[in-house]
Length: 242
Image 1 (cartoon, one colour):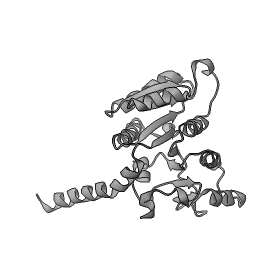
Image 2 (cartoon, rainbow, N blue to C red; image 1 turned 90 degrees about the vertical axis):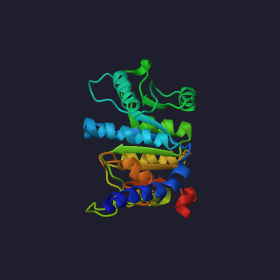
Image 3 (cartoon, rainbow, N blue to C red; image 1 turned 60 degrees about the vertical axis):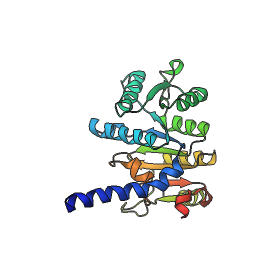
C-alpha cells in the first residue's frame, strides 16, 4: 500500500477511534432534530443531511425529526417526502402528523425514525411553529438532545461574529440575556432552549444547518460547531470529564 493511501486510512481509523467515547455515551439516547434549515439547502445538501441523521441511527442513537413546510406545499406530502429521503439512506422512517406520545414510543421501539409534521388532520390549516413542536416532543420524550438546525450558528463570543460559545450553562445564558449580549435573531431559539432544559431535556444544540456535516461535527468532536445549552456542569457526559 502506497504511503499516501496508508496515511489516509490511518487518519480515517483515528477519526473512528476518537468517536468511540461519544458513541458510547450517546447509545440509545433520543435526539430531537428540528429541521428548520430546509430553505437554505440544495437537494444534494438535504440528502447529505438525511445521510447524517441515518448515521446517527446506525451508531445507536434514536433520532426524531420535526420539520416545517414551505408555504403553499402540502404538509402531509412534504412529511412523506422527508421520510422517503431518510429511507433512501438505508434506514427505516415513517411520517406522522401531530404529536402523540404513544405513537412516538411505538415507532422508536420498532426501529423507525419518526418524521413529524406538527399539524394533524384536525388542525391542518393552523400555523404551528415547528420549533415549538420540537420542544414539546423533546420534553415529552425526555430527550437527551434537542437540536435546532437553522441559519444561526450559536451564541457569538464577539461582536465581529468570528467564534461562538461551544457550551454554556443556563445561569450563564440568563446573565447574557440580561446584559443584552444574545443577538435578536437567535433569541427565540435560546429562550426555547432554556425552557427545554428547565423541563428535563439534557441539552440543547443550536446549529447552522448549512454547515456540511454539522450534526456529526457537533456530536462527535471536542469543540463542535455550534452552541450547547445545559442546565449545569453536572450534566456533562463521561467523555467530557475524562
